[in-house]
Length: 170
Image (cartoon, rainbow, N blue to C red; front, side, top):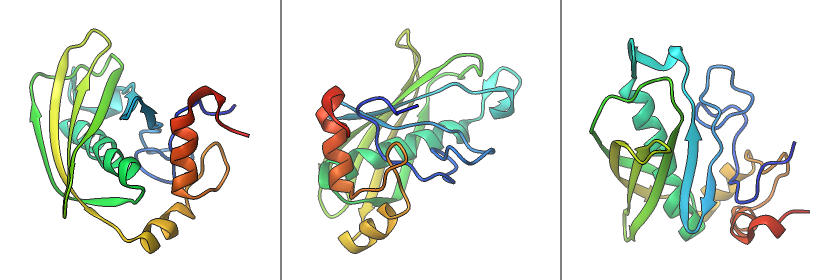
């Protein structure tokens, strides 16, 4: 089944977005109006304590979502150098969460913000990140491992497809 319009590339074995990783979170990142988003529905294995989603899962989702935001804007991948998460309330493992990432600035280090909410708008965590941009050569090497709906392409092509929306695709 094809991915929805706006979907960004993924690596099949990635812990966060890998569709072939049975231990992973299996989310898909999307570009929606310049904001990177994903949705995540945990199961009981993602709990830290009964009735509470593990904070490391939330941090992982924020890191990956916030890292995609400047990558889409700058056309190159990046790696985290600093991640701050403020947990605002316990996240119950029985609901779906929406994670968003936004670019704040593209300097020597790329700065981002993100949130974990539910569909009712309750905010469970907020994040800030600083990311180091990778070279175009490193970006191309990583992109050679990623696919969009099973198809390999450059990051620029993937971003153009995600930005084009419903009319995009083959």
